[in-house]
Length: 136
Image 1 (cartoon, rainbow, N blue to C red):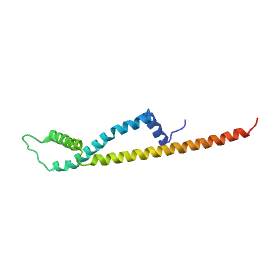
Image 2 (tube, rainbow, N blue to C red):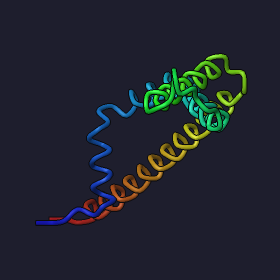
Image 3 (cartoon, rainbow, N blue to C red):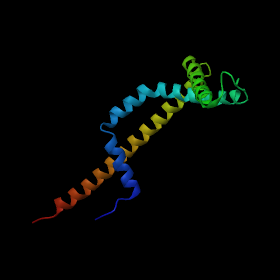
């Protein structure tokens, strides 16, 4: 039994997960703005988190694990609220970078496909030339 190399195994896994590669790209384009918004929300949440670390809670009405969980959820909601308004411009920068990355990936895939087709055509031409010259 032949063993698969890690690269081959990864390629097989990726291809099995994507039924229609063109559909995956369309979904990416539709979800790009949402991904950028979520990125900004997480970024803002992480930036706001240190502001709340030094705040002490009232022992009568707060504290404990419940307070920690609620505070984390509240900080996440602050991040989402700021991201919904797109006040920082982070979403625009992330969108531009995602579009740039996608166009580079598409260009490299197209050049690889063209190069692969040229190699196949060259092999077919060489094979055809050998068969034409041979006689039975």
